[in-house]
Length: 439
Image (cartoon, rainbow, N blue to C red; front, side, top):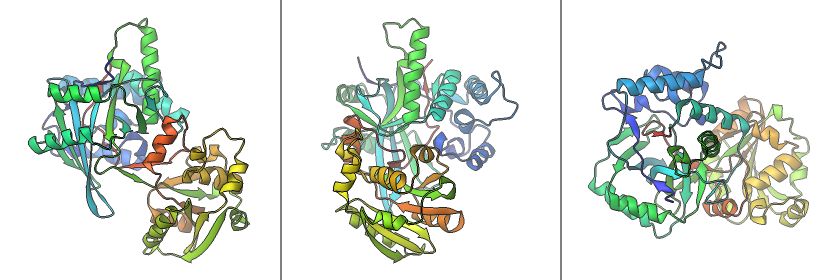
């Protein structure tokens, strides 16, 4: 069987909006209520109406955000707002962005990928939650379309496909070029060349993938495939629903970027902050310093340097008080964790030490409280960490170093699962460039 396939994508027709950006949206799971309303107001054909429709108190089983998305999708197809491409294609997708002020481009491709069970040829690296999985399953049942890609990664130091994509981009103008609200560029090419498609299919035939973003979407694809197969009597031939839309990028390719995701402990978490530094002293060396929003960037650089020799965190407790925590208690920590059936590599990740040792054991914050994203919140902006502690009632903020992608691979392919928000693959994929019918 071929695990990677081209597909006949559904795309916005030319001229639907004066600016293509008016039709696009961030991934559904990062859209705030205010952003949702802004996207609704931006254009009547914005993709938010498909991926994250409004909810009303009067919603019923027959009339709800999912049925309305399905009706909108059908109407847009019928009136020509959304049109199928002329031929199956792989969709080359490049994103231009800045990393610490340096122009950077990440390149990958969008395809149909066979839905294998976790642990076969595709591996998760983070835990998932029940709520988002049900939400995406209800949307998929109603619309029978993938609107957003699962983002998966592989590692190829020789950059076999990256060289092909680079040559393609040099010779061909993109079908779509758009600059989003953050000033990031998105470029899409449809690749229909049989030789290129054949090379890509063969390259991935026996190559494992790790999911970077979209764990809930991929779990939904597994569940939806099972439902449809049972309803159809488990047909011997593969169907469209046996595949899902996926963006695949090489972690060894140019522009591949992971940012740290910082943690903020809200007052509602009930953290045991009294005597916290005494308890931390049993596992960390503690160096206190003063920071401002103007100087926190310099502290982040100091944190990066410390992280090269040992797991390290910044702990912000308000009023400009920052502490550099450098892990010194490896032996004691591993003894504490002896009964936990995780690999040592997983236990010694920065995010695991913070979760297992600092949040749970020292501060008394359960995994459930971390999972609800209210008692512990997340951000990629160190200044926002300070803001939440100083002005929004948070009791502590933890600045993190980025998780190494090699560690992500080792843990995921070894069957381990990292704590939530262990990684932030940057930038996010934009939604609305191409859609995959799975009816």
